[in-house]
Length: 200
Length: 190
Image (cartoon, rainbow over all chains, first blue to last red; front, side, top):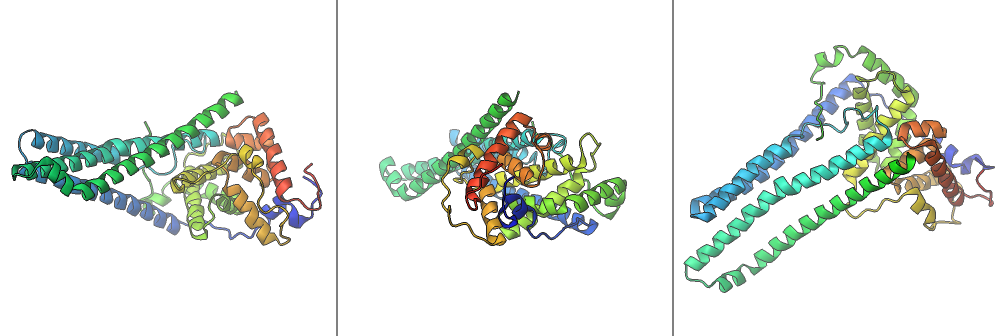
C-alpha cells in the first residue's frame, strides 16, 4: 500500500489484532437453538400479554357500553386477534434468509432492510392500530359516563386533560418514531437501488 | 412476502443425522477463517459482550448455512457472505433510532478530529481503526473489511455484489481515508 512501518499500516494493524478462535460445538449449537427458541417464546408471550390487556380493555368496554360503542370495541377485539395472527406469522423466522449465502452482500442487505421496513409497517397496522382504537374507545366510554352523570363534556374533558395529554404524546411519539424509521429504511432501499442501477 | 425457515436442530439426534458434511465444512471454514470472522465481528460491534454474541451468531448461522452449500461459490465467498449478512442484520437490529451511519463518500469529507494525535502503539491504532469502520454503513463496511483482509477487487465484488469498477472506486476512497488518518511522516497511499 505504501511505505509504512508495520505499526502504522492499517492492514497490518487489522490483521494482527489478537483473536481467540471460536468453534461451534454440538453442545453450543444446541444451546444456541434453545436460546433462540426461548427468545422467540418470550417475544411471543410479551406480544400476547399486551394484546390481552387491550382485549381486556375492549371487553370491559363491551360490558359497560351500548350500541355503537360496543360495536367499536368488538371491532378493536377483532383487530387485535387478527393482529396477533399477522404479527406472529413470521415469528419463527431466523436471521438468515433462505439464500443469504448464495446472494451477494448488496442483495441480502436489501432483503434485510426491506424486511425491517415491512415489519415496522406491520407493527403500526396490527399492533399499534388496534391498541390506539381500544384506548380511544375507552376514553370515549369514560366521557359518555361522565356526561350521563350530568357532567358537561367540557368539564369531563378538562378533568381528563393530564391523562389525555400523556396519551396523545405517547401515540404521536410512537407514530413519529416509527414513521421516521420507515423513512430511513426507505432511503436506504433507494440508495441501494441507486448503487445497483449505477453498477449495471 | 418474507419466507420463514424453521430451525432443524431440535436435539442430539437431529443434529447428528446427515450432518457429517455440514459439520466438516463448518469446521474447515472455522479453522481457515475463524480469526477473520472475529475481526469482522469487531468491525460491526464495539461492545465486547455483544461482540461475543455476534461472533457466536455468525458461527451458528454459518454452521446452518452449510446445509445448503453446493460449491457454486468458493468457501471463502460463502463464509464472508453469511458473516456479513448476519453482522449487517445485527447492525440494523441494534441501530439506535437517531444514530447516523455514513458512507465512504461522506466519511472522506468528514474532518478527522484526532488528526495529528496519532498514537504509536498498535492497540490504540486498532481502536481507532475499529471506530472508523463502525461509523460506516454496512455495505461500505463490507468493502473496507474485505480490503483490510487483503482481498482483491474481484473477490470483494463477489462477496458484496458490487461491480469491479465500483469496488475499485471504493478502495481508492478507503486508501485516501486511511492514508489521511493513519499518516506517518507525510507518506501517501500507493
